[in-house]
Image (tube, rainbow, N blue to C red; front, side, top):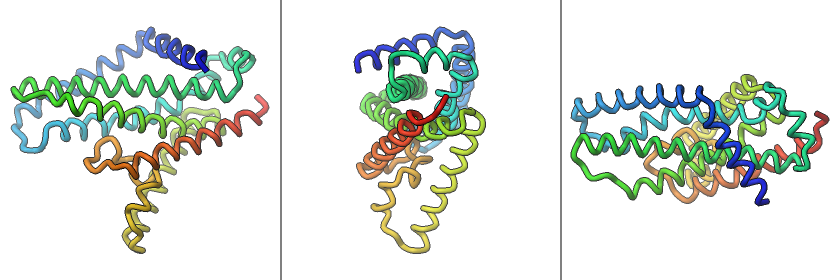
Length: 238
């Protein structure tokens, strides 16, 4: 088990050795700094922390979804799948390594979010909400744990980044819309629906009504998708 964490961290370090990663993150960071700068000039009355979360996390959730759909297909595209799948590690351990790497990457995105909030609050001469920092990391951890396992399920089946991303995104929208309509027409208790991850996945990072039901639903949903992915992956002939 210790090797799984060690390999995940090494893969995380290898990922951030790529120049393209820093170029993309740099451009993305500049774009949002410009957006935040516009917010400081507009004198909006909305809670600044919520406003930045809505802008930043609303876009980043799709970035994380795309990254999650690239975890396994990237090995096939780069031709490193043969080396990995013939190693002494089981396929379940390989999947767990990918998920842990993705979780570390997501927490890094959460750190960027806090930097944006710190910049905004500094320009406004407002106290920096350090208490929100821990919540951000927890939410990013839970969100990435579910989204990573959810899209991993599709990549195990399709082996294609594009097909996995489109298919996974379609079902996310489909099930979230079905659950929303169900709650409106059949007056199903929202407390029951909150346990279903699809009901709140798009509002999880930017919502202001996160509760224990949603968190439990995301954690259990992630575990189910990981078990399904591991079962299918172990049975596949690669």
